[in-house]
Amino acid sequence: MNILITGANGQLGSEIREISPLYKDHHFTFTDIPELDLTNYNSLGNFFSKNKFDCIINCAAYTAVDKAEEESEKAFMVNATAVKYLAEYASKSKALFVHISTDYVFDGMYYKPYDEDELTNPKCVYGKSKLDGEVEIMFNSDKAIIIRTSWLYSSFGNNFVKTILNAAKSKGALNVVYDQIGGPTYARDLAKDILDVVPVYKAKSKFEVYHYSNEGVCSWYDFAKEITELAGIPCTITPVESKDYPQVAVRPFYSVLNKAKIKKQFNLTLPYWKDSLKECLKHLK
Image 1 (cartoon, rainbow, N blue to C red):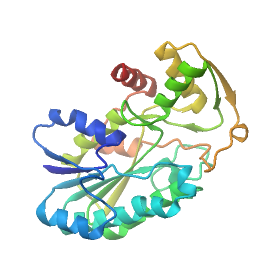
Image 2: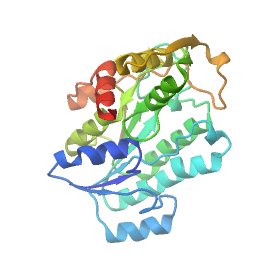
Image 3: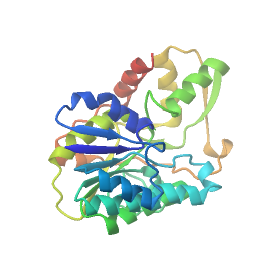
């Protein structure tokens, strides 16, 4: 397959680039803002007139959750409008469109792991912009996979794991919220499973939505404790409530995703989050 990766310099895109040599049957084209401006419709048209792809994997996103509250126009441009453009061009070229979405499309007030068809109700600009992107795919793509993931981290880019490691080393004591529950996702696991799923995907309808994260659940506090302990960094981590750690954007209190659908349809075995964290820390070393 001839595969285009957008947002190739981000966490997921970088992981796909890292493992792409293992997939010798595919040819990969990696692009980010310097090579391809996804928000410029004419520029995209020129690009797709010169390049043909069997699959487009969109890893590009505006992910600054708090900053999105003051840069809503930019967030919607990248997370919704650019997604619409890509979906249209994927449809024109009859390419499979794979798009990465988020647990933030839910309000986090549920009581059990979210299924794919659960009612969406985002509470922040970031979540609303990502949901709009999903809607654009539904109306503008012939064949697409939307993969919602949560708490993404990697040895590349900025993420919670790196933030905790750096803060633990420099401060020695941290306050971390314990009343937000979710599922960490190692971007390398997601990258591998995307590349394994793409060749065998058979669309039964216009598009399919899947949920993906590592197995198990935890709070941000539990996650932080495990990071510092596995890294061998002495650090006192105190659990605090979200109200004692105010942030600009509203976070979901409970955003555990039910992965039964993707596991069953593609016979996937997802690693436990602590095991994947160990692997990521090895790469960081």
